Length: 254
Image 1 (spheres, rainbow, N blue to C red):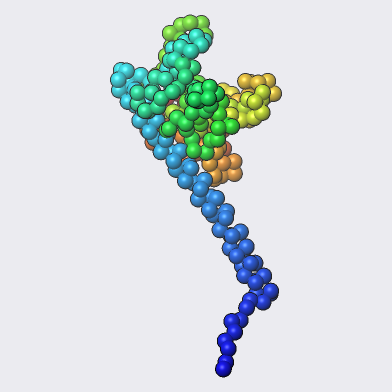
Image 2 (cartoon, rainbow, N blue to C red):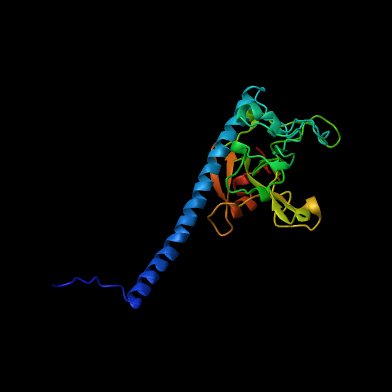
């Protein structure tokens, strides 16, 4: 009577299989990581598109004016009138504090970062958050305080007065270098790179630059997503933003 014997793997064959699997993992893992990052970037762009719609809805109900950064240049703490507060009816967000920042109290009485839906960039972690949750507006030449430092009325612009609406940055991935917090954090506005050099990182607390945040893959220095005044969204090369490509920050006019 014959008995059948199953041939077992030899040690060498097993090592070859393991080596092949390791090779496949090393080839596929970077692609999977890139796919994950691109998915985050796509979700970020969707958020910005919705925020641009919110700005337009606000303008439609306010005689074409964009919201002020805040009505006052030196706001009274907790006046609840930051642009984030003003856009709440159009963004379906809740729990913005009176300071306009995404912080609140959990059931244990502890301060915590709140996910603010379309305001939150998927590439941002709670440790990154300082002011807002990933996005900031073009403060220098588009979204202004309601009054200048002398107290004179100023306010933001009307959409109908912006002639290069498809070229001018409205809101996008932004950050500030907060030396006292150990590095880059999210922030509510960004500086014009012509007026304030983004590359000059100061060691004096808030003195660091408020600039675009290249959180997404692509280019030599990364990419930042941005919504433009006309409502369309782009993934922008960080170097192009530093160079103010096509005067995207309206340094030379609208």
